[in-house]
Length: 393
Image 1 (cartoon, rainbow, N blue to C red):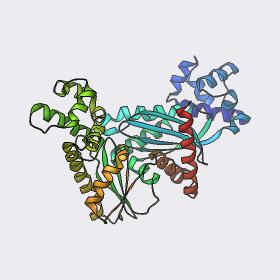
Image 2 (cartoon, rainbow, N blue to C red):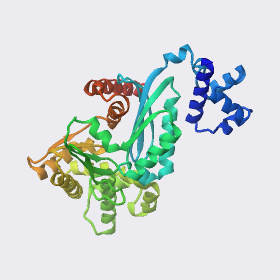
Image 3 (cartoon, rainbow, N blue to C red):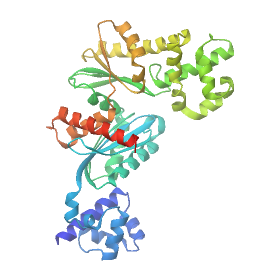
C-alpha cells in the first residue's frame, strides 16, 4: 500500500540521519531488528503507539512520518557550510536565497583539529538544521584544510555515509571566498584569517600556494601577527628587543608580565595567540616602529606568495582578499599596493564566505542554470536581515 511505502522510506531516512542501525533503533523501541527491517521494507506497519513515538523521536509530525498532506508543505531547502580554523557557519536556505536558519559552531579544520573533531562539528551542525521542517536536497561544505585531496575525500565519505539521501560536495573554504566575491574567470584569491593561503584561479584550474597550517606558514595571518606581537613583548622584557607599545597591550591582556605567562599562552593554543594580532595594528596607528616592522615583514611574505601566483599562472591581475584581517584593509592595502605598483589590483572582500558556499550549493548541486547574480543578491539581502534580527532578538 502507498502509505506503507511512505512510512517505510521515512523511517529509513530519519534513522540514517540519526546515524542509528536497525538494531539500535529496535532496542530503543523495545521491538526486534526484524520489526524495523519489515517497517523499512514496507512489509508491515508500526502500530499507532509506535508511530507516535517514532514521530516524536525523529522530531517530526505524525503527518510527516506518514507522508501525507502536511509533508507536502515542507519547504525545499539546502545547507551551505563555511568551515574555518576557529568557527564554522551553517546556513539553511531555499532556492530563492531565503535564509531559514543559521548556526555557528567551533572550528572544523582537519589539519589543526583532527578528523574526528572536524567530523563531529560538521555532523552536529547539519543535524541541527535538519530538525527544521524542511526537505534538504543538497549540502555544500567549503572547509579549511579540505584543499588537501585526502582530507576532502575523508570528509566527503563521512558525510555521504551519514546523510546518504542528500547530494553532498566538499571543497576548500577558498572556494567559498572565490564564489562570494567577483565573478571572475581568472583571479588570485587570498584568505587572511587565523591562517593564510593564496590561490591562483585560471580558466581551467585552481592552484594553492601556502596554506600549510599555522605551524609551517610564515606570514600574513592572524596567527602570524599575534605571535609576532607576543614575541616583540618577550624580546623587550628579555632586553634583546626594542621598546614597543605592543608590550603594554600584551601584558594588559595577560594581566601580568609576559615572561611569566609563556606556559599560559601555550596552553591556550593558536586561536588565543591569533587574538593578539589587533595589538600590532593598534600600535602601528600610534606610530610604533616595532609594529611597523611586523606589518612590513608579514606583508613582504604575503606579497611574495601573491606575486608568485601571478608569475607562475595565467590568473589575471585581480587579487581578492578575504578573512578576519580585512578589518585592517587600509593598512594592509597600502602596504601591498606600494609593493605591486600598478601590476596588481587589490580588492578587499567583506562579503561573508558563506555566501559563496550557498552559490556553490545552488550551482553545483541544485540547478546549474540558476540565475546566480539574482540568487546572490537575494541571499545577501536575506542573510543581512536575518543577522540583524538575530542581533536584536
